Image 1: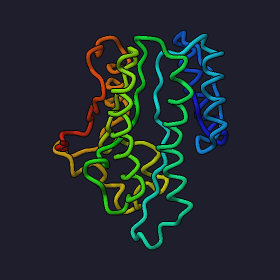
Image 2 (image 1 turned 120 degrees about the vertical axis):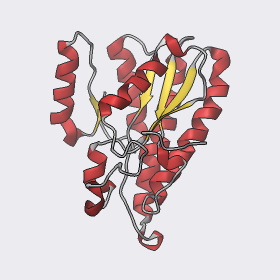
Image 3 (image 1 turned 60 degrees about the vertical axis):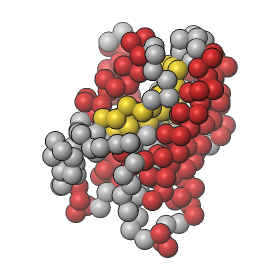
Length: 217
């Protein structure tokens, strides 16, 4: 489990729940924007778990910005480093450890198809993740490694209240979906479980949308 060092309290709580359920948890704090951390993350995960057969790339940065002329180079770079480069680095380090039957699951977004004007950098990374997933899926399929993605719609996560959305939009978050509400993490989790399991053995390069009915290509 990867997390920022300042997120230790939350990470410890989740790790505790998993350990009570009988899971082995390896906690590896660090910053996904750092190339060396990605290498360490995979190495320590392999050592701590005794191998690797499921990789989920779920780290993300989303900060709204209403004017491209004020979107700083630093924010643009940080968003791509966190959302795209980290995924690339982790996959690159993980693939040599993955055997036939293994799976990689990346996290994209409805923003890849229907970008908000205030999320230019974030939406761009999510479109990149979609294409990366489809290309890598074709590359690794002959090795028996499946690569897919999950595309959440408006799901209620800490991203939304930490400058992911303007304060005045938080109360109406998710109302644009046909269901008329935001989704909850518990409604998103089964998509990852499906793509991680053998039940999806004939699914490669797919983006599984969990978005309350918002149309996608």
